[in-house]
Image 1 (tube, helix red, strand yellow):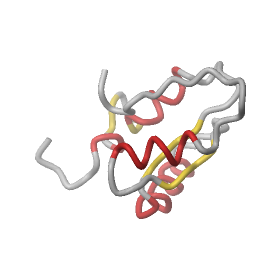
Image 2: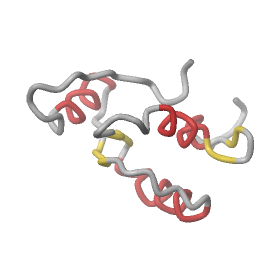
Image 3: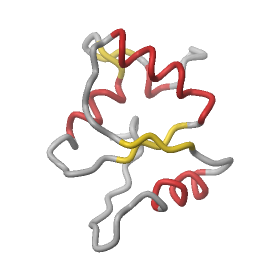
Image 4: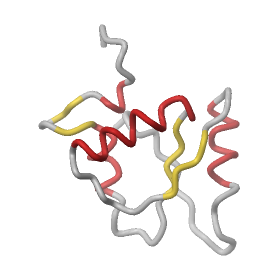
Length: 90
């Protein structure tokens, strides 16, 4: 993408791609967002900048995709249906 900005934070129709993704799942009871903890402050600043107030649980990712998914699954309530979505891939 020729940028140092992670793809999920690039703008699409004037807001970060990740916000579009989360909005598509906003009808679910609980959304768990997994990001590297090094991106938490940046994500928080984007949410403030774009007035993004959708409810979600933020979880720190791991060193690998497997570990990140595992970290997110640890926050899932029992008897839940889980869908894992990569925030920037269609």
